[in-house]
Amino acid sequence: MRIGRVVRLSVVTALSALAVGACKSNETADAAEANSVVTVKVGKENVVVVEQAELKSGPGISGSLAPRFEATVRAEVGGAVLQTFAEQGQAVRKGALLARIDETGLRDAFLSARAAVRTAEQSATVARRNEERSAALAGAGAIADRDLEMSKLSVSSAESQLADARSRFAMAQQQLTRTEIRAPLSGVVSDRPVSAGDVVQPGAALFTVVDPSRMKLEASVRAEELSQLRAGAPVEFSVNGYPGRTFTGQIARVNPVADPATRQVRITVEIPNTGGQLVAGLFAEGRVASETRSGLVVPVTAVDVRGLQPSVTRIRNGKAEKVTVALGLRDEATERLEIRSGVAAGDTLLLGAAQGIAPGTPVSVSTPADTRTASP
Image (cartoon, rainbow, N blue to C red; front, side, top):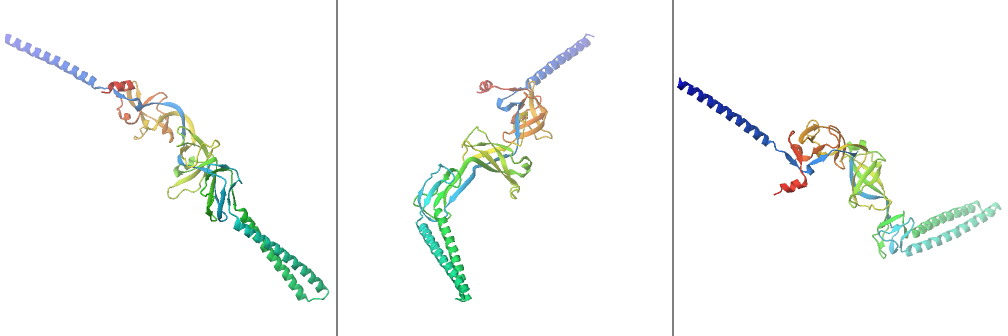
């Protein structure tokens, strides 16, 4: 009997020991599981706060600035350039004398043409007097009608020669005035490829005069964005010579025909330049502001559009959570999106690669001090 009792006690003791061991094993596993949940720290560059801001949408444009009015002054007569009166960058008024071409040969032609006119006038006068005399003699029967007709033909020939001489004289006079090169518009001389002493031919470029008070920007826009274009629509752009500054203009013309090769539409933007700060040739980049409104705004990199519905990863109560959102306007120039629903102003969202943090994971935003402490 004593032997059986000892066996029963030994079994109970063993079971009790196993139970205690199992409890301790479970507690250890729970503790290990608790310790395995690690808080992910992200830098401030990986988060953004949803804010209320103004958003603008419209097609982006780029191109080089050019003066709205530009004229290349060309020589209308050939000869040596005697003198120039304007330099590059000099302001001139319409009609101002820019240069003078040697007129020696043209003046000789002018004087010869004027003398020819006087000779033709005298010949015409003599022919008319002869006709009057012949008419009187024919009326008295002193000469034949044939002689009267000859007198009339002489008058007609003399008058024709006079008209021809006057035409040549007018042309010579006009050519003489063309030796004076004058500004076709008020503006600034942007180019002067000739100097005094150069011999030029008719058609040679002498000056380029531009009006810098108004500039233009010609750019191409995709045909898909044609509905956002209209004459008078405002345009905002920046210029590489003025960092941080924004200039404005408006669409003056929209080409009614798309380029068959690129399927793009050409537009012309006119820009006031009363201060003269903008210079032709500078590269400009901006956007047609076709629509403007205020709303909740986030960077494009805060939105994940790979799923069926766009979503963001928000930090709430210290944990990451995936939130489905509805999108509105997209600002191509600033790469920002409007969020119509799903988040509120002040919410903190993860950006870029940080969006890969699994929902439910504890997340904290590290400060620069935390980063320095973590550095070895």
